[in-house]
Length: 107
Picture 1 (spheres, rainbow, N blue to C red):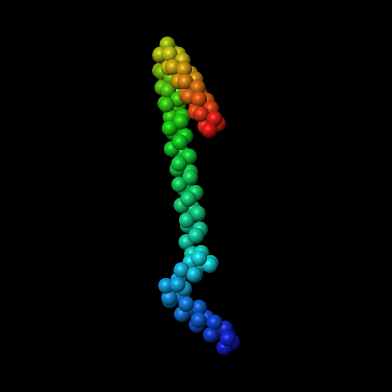
Picture 2 (cartoon, helix red, strand yellow):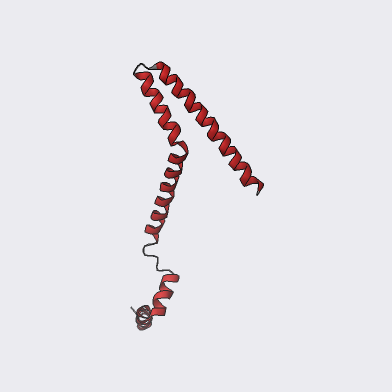
């Protein structure tokens, strides 16, 4: 290592000890922890997508499983009623979704 390189490293080390130097290092390339933050953001997006999916499809999925359970247990009349109710709920949700899309597109 040459004398000039040692001087430069000493200057950088001194600069990192000052408050302004630490801020500068953060802004200009000290990327430690940056990858972890990307994973945190990705995890939050996945969690938000799961919450939205459960909120949107949860009731219909539950009704479908109830209908299947009733059909398997031999209660076919109740299962047919549950399927009809599930279809009605799906149509209602579809209409509400369409109205919401129209409201948004009108803005």
